[in-house]
Amino acid sequence: MCYKLGPPDPASADKAPKDTYFTCRKLTENLFYITEDDKWGENPFIYVRLYASTVVLIDTGCGGPHNSSDADFTSLRHFIEEYSVADNDSQPLNPGGAKNYTVICTHCHYDHIGGIMHFTESSTTSVVASSYDKDFIAGPDRLPTSSLCRFVGMNTPKYSVTVWAEDGQSITDSAGNDLGLVLYHAPGHTPDQLAIWDAQERFLFVGDTVYEHAPILFPIEGNIKNYVATIKRLQGLVKGWNSTESQSRVLMACGHLTCNADAGELLRR
Image (cartoon, rainbow, N blue to C red):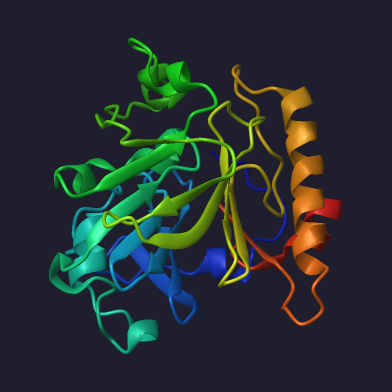
């Protein structure tokens, strides 16, 4: 959920081709981000991390449909499995759905879980969410309100969390192989906010905890005190990761607007 102010990140200005609601760009050889041209104007960023054994999705966007109905690719899953991505040697990111999916939800707002049911229809998909406040997601009749779906006229997605991530937990594929992703509880914007650290790619994914050119919105379940503590913690983590001179500086990938900013600089603003 993002209220935009000022000049956007150039990447967020990309317009989707007429035959799809999505635009895909490469960040590294194995990391891509997708921007959704959704009818709510959220334009969420969806991150796709490619592994030999699985495809990791960080959020699934709004799930459409857009106000126009003439596009061929309106489903995120269809786009990932069938659309020829120029930045991926004109190949789909997961051709024919050959690999299983691991979906990590940075938090449960509608513009981050809207496309999740396209993936959970497969029993092999794993869904990861924060264990910080399970009731916020899984409590009886909580999700329509927690997700804000009921306020924007979206049918609330139905899904079950298969991995309730503890703070500092590493994520594995279905065979138990470590994917090199560490999840941190990052409450503030919402109780269930997660931050994901990818040490190999040197990216920190933060959902709606931070982004440029827009204020962070706090719904009724948000908590300023927790948010301040989360920012201080992330500052400390990034400082530690940046302390190794032989490594490149940590980049931050956000849920909107910002996909490759210097994490240390952005967290100091």
